[in-house]
Image 1 (cartoon, rainbow, N blue to C red):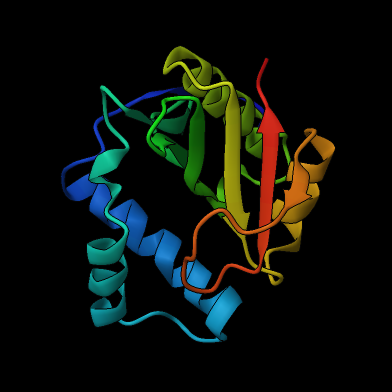
Image 2 (cartoon, rainbow, N blue to C red):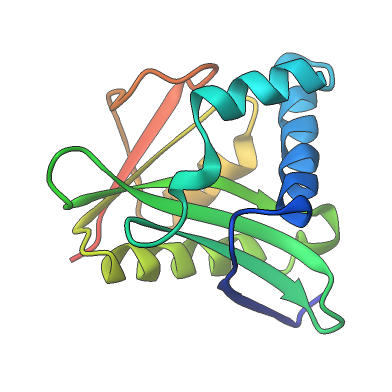
Length: 163
C-alpha cells in the first residue's frame, strides 16, 4: 500500500468506535499480553475520552486508502492552561497500512494540525512494548522527557518543539 490520503474526520460515531475498539484490542495484546475487554475499553474512554480530539481544541485525522478503506488514525489536543502544548493521542496504523511510511505521514499531519491549533510543542506517551512507535518518534525528532501526565501503562514520554 503506497497510496493514501490523510484528513480530519469527526471523532464521533460508530465507525470511530469500531476503529478505537480495534486500536484498544491491539494495544491490549501488545501491552497487557491479551485483548482488552469491553469493560476495560469503556473505562479507558471514560478516563481519557476521545471527544477532546475535535475542534476548537483538537483534531482527529484519518488515513484512508484509494478505495476509502481505513488505514490509520491519530488525534491531537491542546493540553495545559496555555495553548502552547499539544498532545498526540490514539496514533494507530492498521496492519494493511504498515511498512509504507504511513506512520510518519500521520505524525507529520498531526504536527501540522497542532501548529494550526497554536501549539509550539507536542508531547506523547507510549509503552516499552511499542518499539516501532518509540523508533518512529526518535526518527522524527522527538526526545524522551520526564512524564508530563500520569496515564495508565505509559512508561516512555516524548516531546518535540514545533517552531
